[in-house]
Image (cartoon, rainbow, N blue to C red; front, side, top):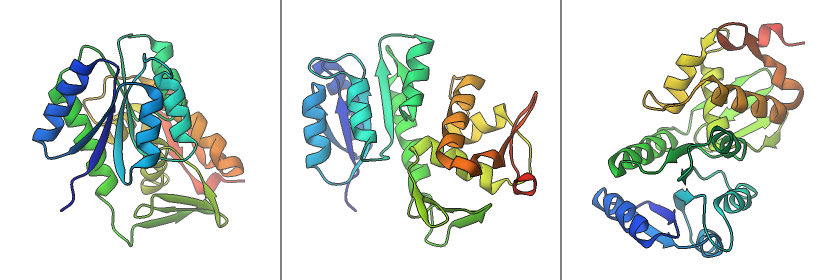
Length: 228
């Protein structure tokens, strides 16, 4: 079986080596880049990169710029690393389509666990795994969403969130449940993370965004019965 490729982008060589060594032990193939421009060269020059681990502060082109450029063309999962524990930075990352956000210093074992959790979810699909509701068609195998036959471009986390909503139609889901199922139990986030993603998801779904209804004081509900 071919090893899955992970692109590690950080201007600190010691940090890259630390992350690489832990990933290689888990049988991943690791590509390294020390700046944003090199990272994009690798990303668009290599085939089948499964995940990107991306530092924020880098020379030539920072992590935010790299993330924006990748998201123009790809839904590949992105884990952002930062030396700052700034809430606004974290929210900006999620707005750009970052899937996980880890503050330095961090445990390499935790980082690897996050990588494996994301990759398990992306591969845990079957060719028959298609959900249709309210004019929205979600194909897990193809990682594709269409509305009236037109593709809707979603980030990895937006796709996971919509999938969870559609699998639980008509059920009021608390923010805690959503965090546990979409972000995993070990994610140290809060309700604003979910609210930010729901707002972005609704916008991308256009008129169908109203199907995701706010349940005040609790969370959200995907309800086609109340669609107007």
